[in-house]
Amino acid sequence: MTTQCGRVSTRRGHTVAVPAPQRGDFGVRLGSRMLASPPAWRRTQRFVVRPVGCEVQCEVMEAQRIPKFSRTPVDEVHLHRAPLAKVLMQVQYSRTPQLVTDSAEALIAETLGRYPVRRRQVTAGVVPNVMINGQQLQLPGSITPGVALAFSDPKGLWKVTFTETAVALETNDYGTRDDFCGRSAEIFAAIASVALPPVVDRVGIRYIDRLTGATVEKVPTYVIPELATLVARVEPPLWLQHSIVESQIEIGTDERMLVRSGLLPAGGAFDPALPPVSEPSWVLDMDVFTTQAGFAFEPDELSQRLRRYAETVYAFFRFATTEAFQDAHRGEPAPIAGEMR
Image 1 (tube, rainbow, N blue to C red):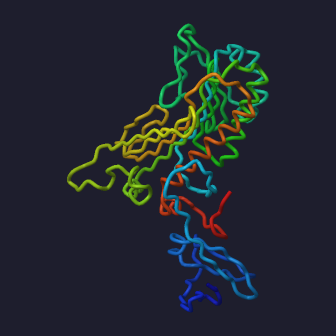
Image 2 (image 1 turned 90 degrees about the vertical axis):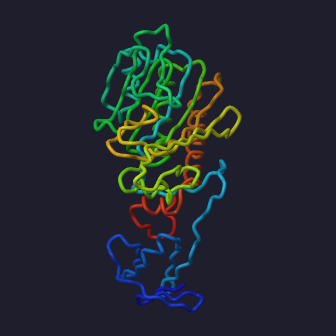
Image 3 (image 1 turned 135 degrees about the vertical axis):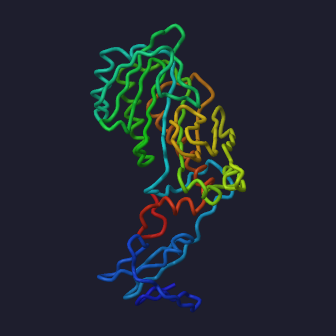
């Protein structure tokens, strides 16, 4: 199609009027003029925009459909208003008490300068706020009380927790996969600078999305039916209190993906990793982890493994969510089709 002087001419000869640019609309600037396309198009189609002389040619790109989940990596679409409530990374390893000494704390703090707030916690058998595959991390039975070193940024948006048997990174301010995996690599390097654990027992990464308010009723249009459960399918005055579905997928040798989704009542939660909220919410919890222990603690290999797991979670997310979900959370219009990273 061709856009010119406020009208769009399609290659089939049909012409439709283009409304004046509005704040937040998808727009194309050509010199001093701003050409805009109807908001409805942005909800259903993608465009590649190319200036041709004094005109702008828009080639329609159909939205990519992913009919079945696989581990094939997909392009990352940046959602400026992604409903990510929390992202966590955890690595469990054999007992390495050198990692929680005073000297280790000082060295780790120097290496991880972006987390200047330091806290030393004495625990009674569990590590506070550290969840591994839905289970609160247990310290060895012979170590009571235990020690957990916590490092965070001043706003408390990012937190790193070390114990002698595990390390975890968690955030509710996730930006990009590269940023999260880069921070994880820094943590692995910090551990290696102190003492390499003899073996790794488990590696996992977890993404938790949460919808609240009026968006809960839109769940059937936002995700595939298998994850929507009974949301918006119970006729008043009947009231759906909660509805949860869980699936576990074997994604490789000694590797699994656990997916949980569902409607939770106000104050409800199916996992301590995500604090409850004061209103009904719908949660999509995606967790990829290993099931076999005993491989070496190699920082580079761990970083690569974690990135593969993050790509797997994202491939499932794209499979599970609809264009309506992505458009509702994109937040800012892209100047060209599919603002990919």
